[in-house]
Amino acid sequence: MINDIKKLQKLSAEARHAIVDSLICAGCGHPGGAFSSLDIMTVLFFNTLKIDPSNPKWDKRDRFILSKGHSSVALYSVMHLRGFFDRKTLLTFRQDNSILGGHPDMHKVPGVEMSTGSLGHGLSVGVGMALAAKLDKKRYRTFVLLGDGETQEGSIWEAAMSASHYKLDNLTAIVDRNRIQIDGFTEDVMSLEPYAAKWKAFGWAVKTIDGHDIHEIAATLKEIPFKERKPSLIIADTVKGKGISFMENNPEWHGKALKGDHAEIAKKEVCLKLKEHGKAINENRVRQVPGRARREK
Image (cartoon, rainbow, N blue to C red; front, side, top):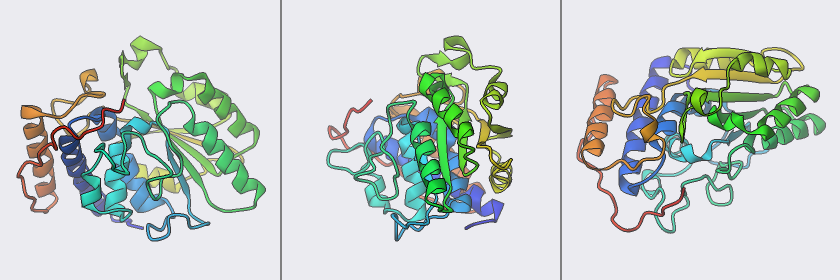
């Protein structure tokens, strides 16, 4: 595990760069939610989760579910840096015959615990995994990363109710609270506030943090469970498209291809951020592979 905050910040910058390259190669994808959730996944995979990339099915590993499966390119970028697969594989994202589809596939990608994409199901499966650990007297923990728009689904609240009923203090849910979903701002589409109060009413121990502050994310995850015999919920306030100037807080970039001038600007910005962390990088553009990208939604 990496406890050095500067190293974690550098890894996050490297992952942002990898995301841009993958999206340019694919010519499609979901950029906004990938960049908003990236810092959370960086801390999870390098500082929090007990995992072994050389043995993805290790019995004692912690379980992680990316319930908002359309943000898969962020998961892949972090998993690549963690050692689950190489860069050549990463750059096949959404290409024909690649293991890295638009949504994670547990039967193809080593280390992926659940195939996700249909929203609203990740927390239910996470409850099952956490309950199984309790029944089997295993010590692994389960983490589920949700999109805030996803929590408009009724099944999320059935799972939330079950988690507190079974006193699953080995379960942690993290909400990427970027306040934007595919049709616009969450508070316009279907208001979620008062958000923390709703989770507390369902029996969860809740904390709200800055979802881009690496130090705060790591420190908060070290505190779990927040209360014994209660599931933990972290509301991570984030910015959709974080780190790419023209994407930030812009609903247009929920699922828009990164091409042309936008691709050039994004590449320059992530390279500049890497240089700030002392890493020289080849700024040559990674070009799209014409005609091969799968058009998954």
